[in-house]
Length: 425
Image (cartoon, rainbow, N blue to C red; front, side):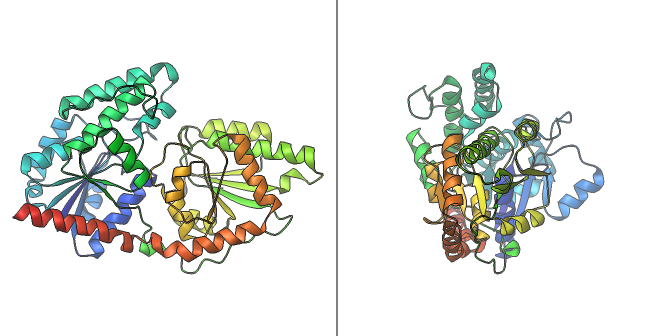
């Protein structure tokens, strides 16, 4: 099969969507399929564009004046759509248009698929309603969400209108973003989602298609060979790793507040030296990096910031850690952070009950709520009962091969085969 992937979130980005696309592209190619990626990017030199093209990655028309660190922005979808059909007429011969994200390049891919009568498969990756809430300052959220919704409706119809409610769309801004997400999914011919819990939410708000569940997977080529069982001895510092984006939706600051609360508890309840309680390694970048750095400095927390780091080094540190952290709440769909932890046999602390779908029962500790106080209590449970680390690690190791993309790609391939066979009849 010939598969074209369209995504506004790929080049010059890091995170779960990028990791998911990379893993799936490689797995599809390993199965003998031809895969091309069309995406936005920061301005590239002619040599950079040629090098990308060797790997079948093509940069669509993108805005030239971009803020480094922000997601690159495509030009208007109609411009991208016309560029695609003019510069890449071979797209007419493709079997599947596989769409990720909901911005300009992705909209162009959906529109072009309908124009060329090529089946489109839309992956619904995440909670744009929570994204706008976490990233945009309070007074501007409704304005930004309304503008995004309006822009989206210029190019894709919006027959479904979500009204403010008491469930997930409890603000006008969130309702606008749900309207955008649902209508985007409905415009595609088929919809894929990594998790059942997010699929239920999409159905609740009006996605009409059957939603096919295809979990994110770990690249076989990077799969750790034989990670040992992690164990924590009594009195040994708890080695913690954070390798999610440093942002509001990932909740780095509430987790740092939990560490400050943990130290405060131990200062008042024991004579143990608090600087030996734990050590946190933070990998990655994001809009809250400066805030996090200032908080750590002000509260004298035992934290090391490593910045953006090649994943091979991050993976090595995951394997050296006792505990992986995912502090997000009511946001993530199928985070690669948890997939990577499971592949390495590392226990996790989670705050969101929905995340229990992602990793095996017994491989994580779930805080009672998303509050810093309850996260601190969960950490204290592990310090008080260090034997739990080894038990959770053994559970992760027993299930880790289930995370391999080579196994998880089979359901996506089956869907693609079904779609192409139906389309050819």
